[in-house]
Image: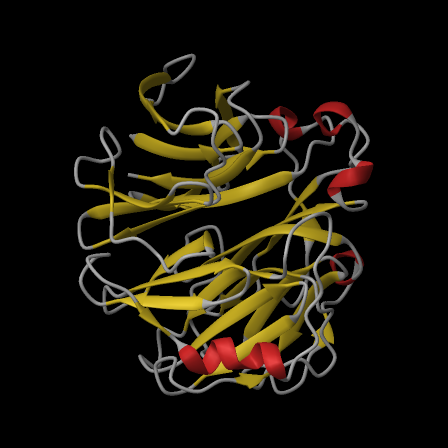
Length: 331
């Protein structure tokens, strides 16, 4: 398999076959640049590189070309592909742009931008409030969500034309948003104040049960049909840490990172035990192997890339020292 890994020091494409001791880097791009997000749409890959724009690859990450420029003064932080194939890019400062032609042109979602005048968004650590997460509802093509760090969660029911805040009860430092692929009314938010769950499309939020409802959350993944969960349940994976990145120490040794699993659609959570993940460095990126929905890809803050089969409890470190991982995607 080939895995695209976006890091604080560029993007690497790694080739790895089961049984090999390590993966092989087959291409590199954007060296020295932070690659904050990756998405796949209609046979192409897209990378959000804040300092240089959005780029597209048509050859599984071997080469990259810039797409249409974004408006002046904004930098891409997140890129996501809708079920329709459309692209949505979230930026710093917080704006949303949509493309219906694979990045050939962009339309500013002005209804979202207008929220800056009515909502309380906070800059922090030298960064302006930005769109950290974009999520689509597979059950309703017109519905999408955006998460602002720091600012909260927002929903559009008309393909991004108009937006409402859905922040009642949720911690406003949004790191990830996921719609339950089995139930479009259930929305999950990984935040700086823990994991939150809404049963009514964000109208009302509650902290998730157990420790995950309080821990600093770093990444979240939902898999609809996995043999690692019941036939009618969604499998969830969640990365957490004991505090924000400023407290993690060198290589994340003081971070208290844990990878959690829920096999019952988020009702209960337990630490996922894997020797290769021990050491406390937080899980900062999650992906799934398209050939087996019980097999996942894990990227960590200390630059490790791990392939794991949840059912067989077989885990293998296929790369290390790649730089803090921001995004991971099987290509």
